[in-house]
Length: 345
Ligand SMILES: [Fe+2]
Ligand SMILES: [Fe+2]
Image 1: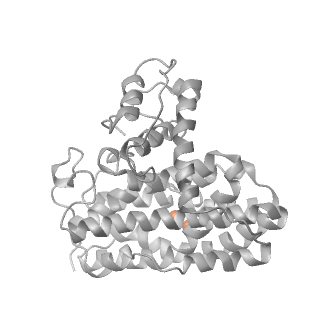
Image 2: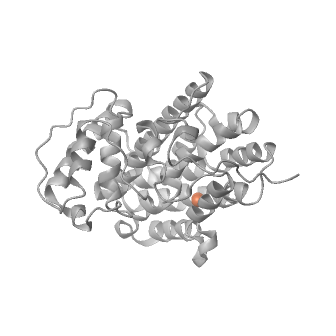
């Protein structure tokens, strides 16, 4: 990320107005989202910025802000608004889910019908739309697997081994060129996009940032360790087929090589990951602690909801012939290379 994004309301304004100073006490603030907390621009951007301090940090921002108590207090306020909205939209799972039923329960969520962005990309999306799709996804994919890694020290035994097995692949098995986030950066470059971490934060809407904030919320809180495991399991279980469609959409437009490699890699890798995640990781965790079954299922449902809302937003915007980002890429500063490299043949 080369520069901080623009504020989108009073909370992100307060934050962005202070973050370039030395760490210190933030003025008290009562975040009141003006609209839907699950997509509110101000709330989701402010939360994303607070979480980002735990990942790569923010440009020009002192690392000391990460643990500044008044910033953490603000983050907790934002989080509780977000969390309450999630719990309203996805009621907590009251009935216990035993280890033997976890795989089936997750599979049932994975098989629910939702808006299929990947089917649209496969058959109909134009290059501008595919580039927009990739920009949305960059909010997570450039730090792919990192939010789930927060769960590692919170697990032990068999589920920990299962999580490590998945994460080892995500991080390229020791080879930088196979780190999934690096593969995604290569795809961005091949599509004429800026692969710099956070380059497009300013144009990525709250409805998309919410999908990443969900993972950070789950990953950073031990009390949500079941939810982050359920999130990862469903993520892996719903990855193979859509990624094949994304690759097919790109090939339809004449792309291959670096542009399609990330998506093709996920067709095969996630076919393996889904079984490990559902059975060994999620099932294994409930084996150890029966009380976590409900949270695992709830975490998966929360992912499913936010993903469907994101896909609905993107498809609705495209259906109305407008950008699904906050600004059209061609008019945005972090724009892109004018002529993406289209593979011949
Ligand atoms: Fe991956
Ligand atoms: Fe995976």
